[in-house]
Amino acid sequence: MRYRAVADRLREQVAAGEYAQGRPLPAEALLMREFAVSLMTVRRALALLREEGIIATQRGRAARVRARPARRRIVLERGAALVGRMPSPQERARLGIERGVPLLEIRRADGTVEQVDAETVEVVVEE
Image (cartoon, rainbow, N blue to C red; front, side):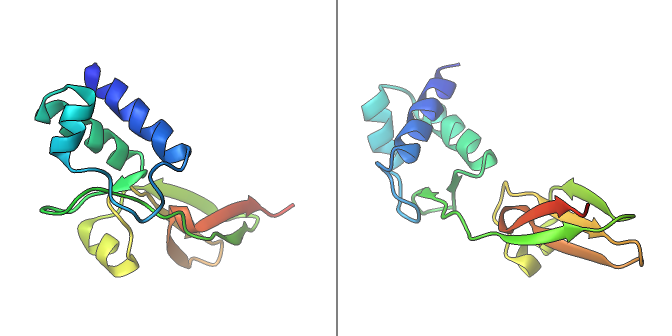
């Protein structure tokens, strides 16, 4: 459970602006020293933050705080359905979706389907 405490503290630091959007977090070795934990604990904490969409990671590079994109509004018309799921690697590449971010499928009454990055939209129901 120690990794959760590390993740909680890093999450608080991100929320407080100590680590700005788009900027890297300290290296794993520095986080190990700062929190007095093992490499595995740091990696589990970072994996949790990645799953939550707070950070992005790439092999061989420091984890970085994900920027929060501007959102556009999508109106869900009567008869439409909204399905949320994790995208396939091909869908992530095609739509530019980062790991840990869900895909939304908007299935309209006319049979068309629109796939969007869940972080870039605000879905409202037509009244």
